[in-house]
Length: 404
Image 1 (cartoon, one colour):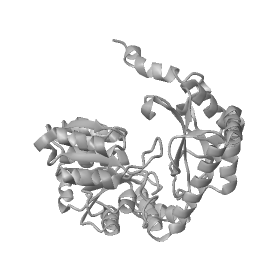
Image 2 (cartoon, helix red, strand yellow; image 1 turned 180 degrees about the vertical axis):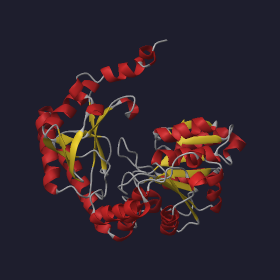
Image 3 (cartoon, one colour; image 1 turned 135 degrees about the horizontal axis):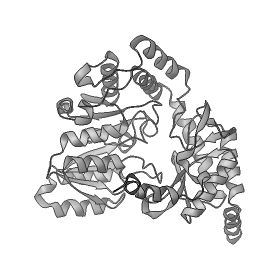
């Protein structure tokens, strides 16, 4: 079999995007102008698909912390913490997460993907039972597969389907692991975490929540949807990433179980991956402090999300979920999604084009993620661009208003 044959399936996926200009993988941001704007193809472009929820990537305190760590501790760690030892900044950030959550244990990983992979590979064994939400992120599925555990999915955000799955496990439900996310990154919908947690505990199962897209965004203190749902003291494992609200690269896991620390001896992604660079840790630590002390960031984010959600809805677009920092616009086909995405680029607006199989439920999506750093003028420009590139949506909106 030739190299071309081995890559034929990937070539098919690429070709399915159609014209080259409709291929998001070929987009290059020649210059990043701010947290919300970049030069793409010599055109200033509003970024509304970057997951930069709190807009901290250009925050002076975050940049200063990253720069100081870079100059004081070097550009990289050149190895894993097991082999090369931990830097003081790694341990300090773990203490900061544990203190913020009020738990005895926290671990920092090199990426958010590896956080879930590392936790699941570390705690699961072949034959263990896992019941996960069907919309769970790829890293959760991958962690379950690599661990050798037996896993099955319950219908997305459906507590009663979770109950049915656990009931069918019988005695094996006790000690099973139930996994959900806080904010689901594709559709922008949130999980009924309190109900899911109660059902997991009813059957004696463990409960894990991935707060990658909800940390810093939900909860009175920004701890995520577990805090908002009032179940922080009941969840067994909470994972998250630095690459969203924390404006850096890496991931974290916290647990109310002090035994989490033992993962350092058995989690292969932790043991065999180079530890996060000092600059990444410095930036994440400064961003974590901003989550703790600057509630206006979250308020700005929600004001922007509400303005965009209301504007797109009024323009006649079908939105996948109630207002959240992720606003997904449903489009009728792959081809229409590619057309609108490319037209938005021509109007200086960058969103995420999400096509099957990455898009859940076989939908084609234009995914927007809001930032606290967006201005209302930028939000209005995004809405205006959407109105321009799909006038049929505006027609539907006008017809709906007339019918009322």
